[in-house]
Image (cartoon, rainbow over all chains, first blue to last red; front, side, top):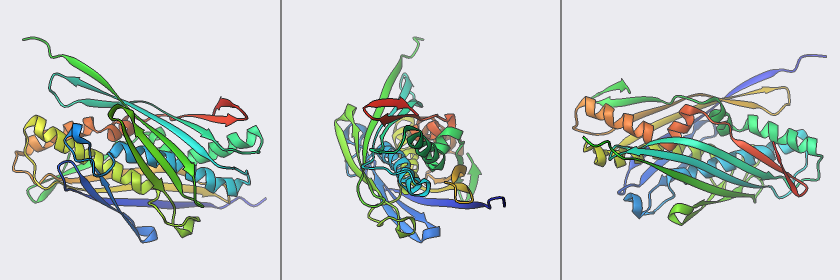
Length: 163
Length: 163
């Protein structure tokens, strides 16, 4: 049997964020490969000094994770020929913050959980197989699973410094 | 000197996602602590079998990460009394996918980079100090830095199974 060909592809998203309202950020997101541009925004509610004109970053994050796994479930359902019905996913994302005196608080994840109803007539084994494929195909879950140190540079005067 | 008090707080976001259009997902995100609800959606472009009615999950993710660090920069600028101007952040998020034959592809992060211009008259040391606080206060960056195995349950018949 001939060995199956292995293909590698890059997925690159670029964002440009600008502070606009009191706590609002307007972020233009570019997906160059597909020549697509998306205008997004985040804000905070009044309790955090914002005007509530857009969802907070963690709401976008929750939707991104939920949408990512759902998208891969549907994409791979076709590819693996495992039929699904009206897919519903419930996500619960739990973080904690710790603050000493008036210092800026420090954050950490506690646990993220996804309850997935594929509404499928497929066998139990096939449903597990589809979810396993969706997990390893979900860019966001794989990033969380592997962990990642984000790189930072700060513009000081006209020069960029690692930060 | 009296020891500063340590406070701990929970931040919990819950999402309910429903598959609607061909690749569209509608996701209701609930932030119970603040009694806030956000209606969000993801879709894919035509190349991936969607209708392009909403940004893809990775666009929401890019905006979430960019907005998260920007929000904490502004929140902690006040707290640390380090003045900032028109903050601009450029984000570049790079993933790769690997596909063997017609198998579902497997994903992995390659690198995420944030270029941050605080537009600040503060000293170099103070700007680095502010960014350091924003990084440890950014729920999303800390989640990425620590890594996290997302928990999954599948509904098989009327029972929930770990998956």
